Amino acid sequence: MTTVNTKNIYRADQVGSLLRPERIKEARRQVESGEITKEDLKQIENEEIKRIVERQKEAGLEAVTDGEFRRAWWHFDFLENLTGVEGYWSGDGIQFKNQQTKSRAIKVTGKLDFEDHPFIEDFKFLQEQAGEHTAKVTIPSPSMLHFRGEVDPKAYPDEEVFFKDLASAYKKGIQKFYEAGCRYLQLDDTAWAYLCSDEQTEQLKEKGLNPDDLVEKYLETINEAVSGRPEDLKITMHICRGNFRSTWISSGGYEPVAAEIFGKLDIDGFFLEYDTERAGGFEPLRHVKRDDLTIVLGLITSKHGALEDKEEVKKRIEEASKYVPLDQLALSPQCGFASTEEGNLLTEEEQWKKIEHVVSIAREVWS
Image 1 (cartoon, rainbow, N blue to C red):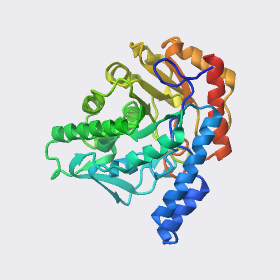
Image 2: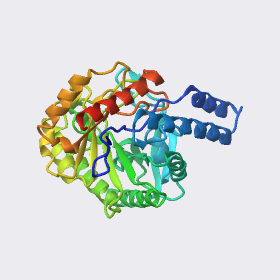
Image 3: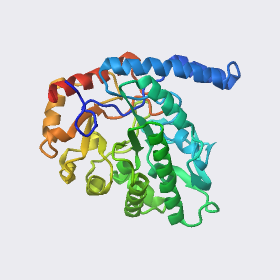
Image 4: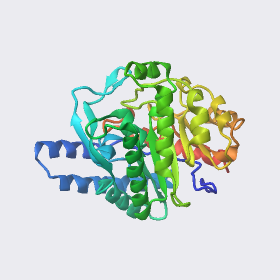
């Protein structure tokens, strides 16, 4: 039995990031102390990526990632390497529930473009290791540069020009990934989940931002970025409520943005977090009107190692199928296992058991 459907979206899938092995963490410490070179680190990353690609295949996944092993962050590493963007140490991290990240931040200081981006070569290496499996690319959604970054008014005095250039840079980047062989690309986006949270929208208003305006600007920018893509390039989106050291940021069901994201975003599938009550129920899925849109249910948590009851997961899939046909559904963990290099609070072996659990349930449901 295969876990792939006719739209090349996989019944058993994953969000992308995997726990960093201690070997990589130690190598990064050694680079910082000057004990080894960046080239030494890259070789270690290569070896570890080869290992975990094979492990993903053994677990039964058909789409494999590099685990984001070359990154410290799920978003900043990509965004900092866009032309016109700079990373810096801000003094303040991102606040999660009872946890705070390191003080990394980004700033737009010049005209945006996608030029010599290192992620293209990173993908080519993954493609070599993937073989007959699909090599999946995960990058932050265009909206994340605006949502998490600061825009220097000297670089962009006109916000409309900023969003136009942002879409153009992403459009160019997506084409470059395609030319490198990519046929499965995932956009990771926390903004949509924050726009579902009363607490987070109030904070946005306090900053002088209008949540309704953000919805419109992000819809327009993302759609322009993915427009005109080749028919055989599948683009999905993961909507995340925050994931750092097994903690989170936002709560709230998808209802406030469901009509917009399911009805207006021109992508092929959504990875939705449904591992806790913070995500609300499946009712917002009634806004899915397209029969070519795949909904990947994140019913398996990546935040702890305990395995979910298989029959309960099946019941929840059945419940979701009341709103979206079973043929349009798939299963995955609710998020990656290491959105930052620190990783969530579970062991590597527990991580693999989670992934195997996803594959096992998917095979039983869609056999």
